[in-house]
Amino acid sequence: MDSKKKSSGAPKPEKQSKCKYSERCGGCVYMDKEYRVQLEIKQKTVEKLMKPFGSVLPIVGMEEPYHYRNKVHAVISGGRKGEIYAGTYEAGTHRVVDVENCMIDNEEADAIIRTVAGLMRSFKFVPYNEDTGRGFLRHILVRTARATGQIMVVLVVADKVFPSKNNFVKALLKAHPSITTIVSNFNDRRTSMVLGEREQVLYGRGCIEDELCGCRFKLSPRSFYQINPVQTEILYRLAVEYAGLTGAESVIDAYSGIGTIGIIASKYAGSVTGVELNADAVKDAAVNLRLNNCKNANYIQGDAGEFMLREAAAGRSCDVVFMDPPRGGSSREFLEALARLSPKKVIYISCNPETLAADLKYLTKKGYKMDKCRPVDMFPWTGSIETIVLLSHKSSDSHINVRTEFGEGKVMFRWLQ
Ligand code: SAH
Image 1: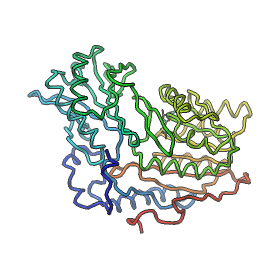
Image 2: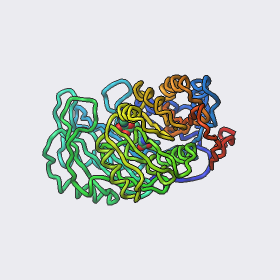
Image 3: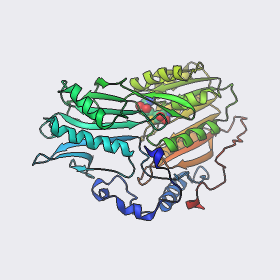
Image 4: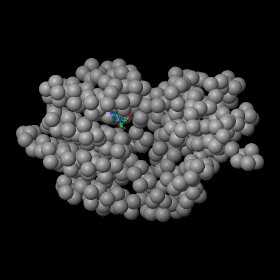
C-alpha cells in the first residue's frame, strides 16, 4: 500500500528513468521531467488559461508522487505463442504493453494483476481477443482503499459462466489474503467501455469502503472515485474551506459521484442536495449518508443540468454550489440554470482547465468573479491537471475571507520555493 511507502525528501531524479514502459505506454507524458518542473508547467498552463479571470495560487504538489493510484486497470491480451499480456494499450494502438509494475500504481494492485495473469495459465482462461470477440478474460480492475486497506478485484469477462469459480477465488485469496472482495463483471460487447452492466459477486460484499476527511465511503465497481487519495483529501478540504459554510446554507453538490464532497460539507451546512447521473454511484451515496449518520443531505439520480433547471424553474434558492463535472465540462443548460439560481458561491472543481476556462467565460459574464483558483496535482507524471476555483456572485454580500490551513499565499512545497 502507498501509505507504507512514505519517505521524506524530494523525488530522486534517477526514479525518472526507472519506467521501462514509458515510451510504449505513453501515460506519463512528463517522465523525462523532474517533478518540480512538472508542477511549474501545470502552474503556467493554468495561469495562462485563467489570465482573464484573475490570479492563480501555487499548485499543491505531492510530497511523494509515486504509487498514488488507488485504481489500477489492466487490459488482457494474448500473444501468438500463448503469452498472456496484462497492462495498458500502447499509445495510439490496441496493442497491449505487459506492465509488471508501474511507478504511479498502487503496488499491491499491480502484484494482484500479475497473480491473476499467472493464474490464467493454470486455470486455462483464454485471453479475450478484440478482433475475433472470442476468449474469456478481458480486463482486471483493482481498487484499493488507502484508509481501510480494503481491496476490490473486478474481473471483466466475456462469458456469463465463470469456470472453476471457487477454486480460482481460493487461489487468488491464498496469494493475496488482503483482498476483501472479488467481482466478476460480464461484458461481451465489442466496445471500448471496460465494464458491462451485469455483475456477480464471487467473494465478499461486492464493494469496499474507504475514508476521506474523516468520513466513510462505500464504493462499488462502477462508481466514480477520485484516484489519488492523498491529494483528494487536500482538494476536498480546500472545497469546504472555500465554501466558508456557517451551518445555515443550502448547498448543491452537482456531479456528486458517491456523495463525497456533499457529505463532508454537510457537517458545516444547513442542507445538501446532490445530483449524479450514475445510478450505482447514487445508490452508494445513499449508503454513505447512513454510514456517516448524515441527516441533512440527500442524493438524486439524474442529469445535473436538468436538475438545476428544475430548481431554477421552481424558484428555489441555493447558497452554495459545488460542481465537479467530467472532462468535457458542464453543459450550457447547467450553466444557464446555475446563473438563474444565482448562488452566492460556486466552488468549481475541474479536471480539465480548458473546459474550466470556457465555463468561467460564461459565468463571469453572468455576474460571477473568480476569488480563488488553485491547481492541485492529482496526477503526477501525467499531463492531467486538477484545479479548484471559488467564484462569488458580484451582487452577493458574502465576504470572502476564507482561512485555509494550506496558507493562501504560501508556496506549498519546496520545489516551488
Ligand atoms: N464529485 C465526485 C465525482 C466527480 S467525477 C467526486 O469527487 O468523487 C464526475 C461525476 O459526474 C461522475 O460521477 C459522473 O458519473 C457524473 N456525471 C457525468 N455526467 C453527468 C451529468 N450530466 N449529470 C450528473 N452527473 C454526471
